[in-house]
Length: 210
Image (cartoon, rainbow, N blue to C red):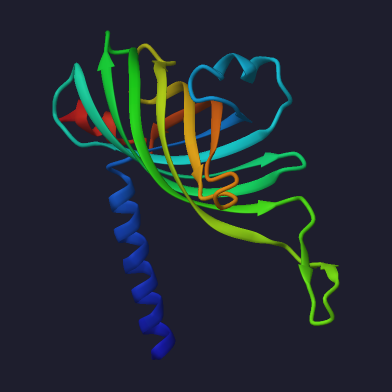
């Protein structure tokens, strides 16, 4: 009986989650990340070392205008910077999008969130005998991030512009506190290419049928 009740609860929760997601767009992107001055460091992303990243996003329109749209984005991502750190981040961004037509829009956003940095360099600590010894295991620390996004979106299907969009974004994040007063913050630039789509693929057909 208890198992049966648990199944009902799980199904109910799943239904609530899926119903909520049907109002959102979901997407994913890959990126190249690099430490540089915000914005003016964007050109380095095309010729410097490749530091890969991946982002998963869910976004929802929060106003009713067609030309000037505001969107809320929740994101989960990670990137790898060789010899420096691997980072996992969870962030929330507010987007302003101006639609030139049904298929093309500009995108400006700002936001922030939480980042956990797993550093790749060796860490030494003084033991009870006064000697420095290397710490073992995976070492990481919590950080905050704040940032901006500049980009655009392009609908790939002319007959249904909302179905799947190509995302091209330049992202800048400030990460900290990194290393106390010595290196308080670290700026990161990224170029991301991704796609987003309606979670509920039947939504457009249902609207047309009405």
